[in-house]
Image (tube, rainbow, N blue to C red; front, side):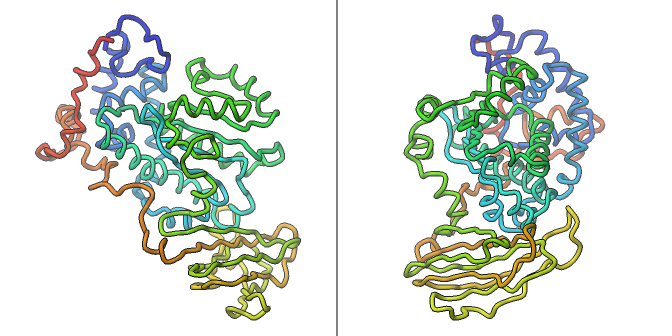
Length: 460
């Protein structure tokens, strides 16, 4: 670990194999301390469970507080506290239950997706806050639902992807992500209080509970006002963090940078690669779906038309709303005939900020070919919204009910059994507060158990 001075690449600062002697002693102190703490402190630090080698996980937390040991301890305590409710609910393994609505509905209103890996092995994550539809989000979930879903995404979806990367490449040890922030469509007016609250809350969770998981951030399609704002923000953050963020000003520069960091087949075609464009991935909405559609009925737009091709079927048509005045919504064919009996749709129950919206299934098994119209007979005020969502399938996609992420044997985020790891088991045994009844080491876990001393003491 005791390198010959700072590494030439700033991104390698305080990485395993590049610690100074002083940093290594802080590492040992943190390692000894964490295994004397309550179990929920330990699982907070090792939130990625079995796949992440212990020394890499510990160094992530240390880097986040610049190896100031008391600051790191405080951070762990705060992270354990803020994650308490999510931890008690298993970090919401069911995305639909977390949101109170199908996850694809959420992604149509706040587009974000994973799409391949960078050359260094890090998954690529693209978020499009410029397309965040606050009205649609309010129709289908709550801020609490969004936060629950964020816990799900970080502790289940992201963790599975990291575990899959390590399974395919045992040398992949830096559990980080290449983040792309696409600000296309962002307007100053769209950054209202509710939108900022969503982004701010998610960011706070990430920075406190998932430290040092951003390998690099590319901000693309930034409007002029954001570029000016970034010049101010850059002066507020430390140089190492600022160095991870790139503002890309034009398309050619963006495409060139993507292909420096990633192979073409890992980059969506709308960003200069050869992979499936993000719009198609988002429209498909998940395994077994040909495409998805969403639309908001308002006082100024009370109709929505769509067409189904032969062999296509709209599996279910959902309506989400918070409107208490109500309206009647029907589904009609191109001749004006009712496909299903029109239904009265209104929100029932409490209607506070954290009360769940109301959802209805308007119709199911609507088959093509044909043109169809969803129509509301009345929308009372400009502040009333009805979100329509539906998944369209065909014979082929119905046979392809495969998830986007490979299913791994067991749960890679199995913090309940993390004490069985060879690289941490001895530390649990040294503490009276550590786990009791440690089981025999399982051979199947040994591929994840590199020795801390060996890796930390590599001279580079």
